[in-house]
Image 1 (cartoon, rainbow, N blue to C red):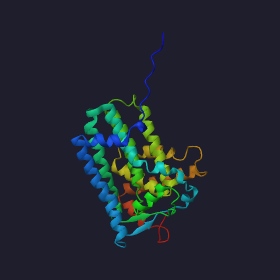
Image 2 (image 1 turned 90 degrees about the horizontal axis):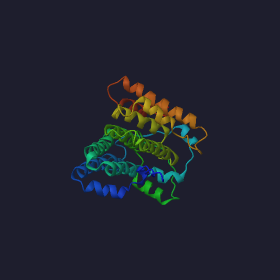
Image 3 (image 1 turned 180 degrees about the vertical axis):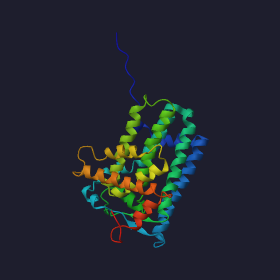
Image 4 (image 1 turned 120 degrees about the vertical axis):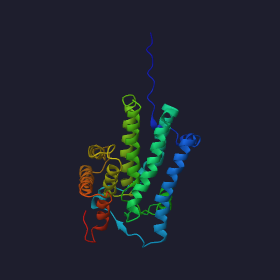
Length: 293
């Protein structure tokens, strides 16, 4: 007698971003939320950044590089992972639609809305102090041409890339728990978390951000939604960085610095009433201008 075959676990990475966008646009509630979020993203990232690039001098721009960044080699091969951060959260929505359909509708709307709010949240820093890092003028791959053309590179602290991927995996986990399927979809929860870590590494390998940007992004997420991204979660997330084969030789030092800087921001934030204060102080007191690292 043949044993019944066990159905393969669905993989979030198999979801089609294009088809997911189509499904979202076909549902009025999801479409409305998506348009709201898109408006926030375009305004708070692209419009504000290009305005600053075209009208320099109105908002200070601070270099946020750290000496440890030199321990992470520029690795152009990671560019595909870096650019996957948008498809990353879109596929998560696709998975929820595939598995739950209309049952997850309100939960998906809430997630999409929080992405728009996330961009506005980060812009509270950008509108007061922009930041940048030293990135190679590399054009050896067509995707780097896109990066240099589309990103003036003035919004590094906090890193929206890191904020978005953290929000995606933590919110997915919360949604799955609310639906009573945490055990059933434990592999998918881990899949998203693992890919969020990988994208975070990618932004460092392609030199779009500094280790300082990662710490700042984690701090911003703990302020944005402390229930989903606590200090313990931040420590667990950091512990996974640069643990795969081929990681930088000083991976342990890199992880230790990222977590230490995150905790410093948290301690400073707890002493005040404005979450922005630690990041704005960091930006205004950089090395070379009487600052700190």
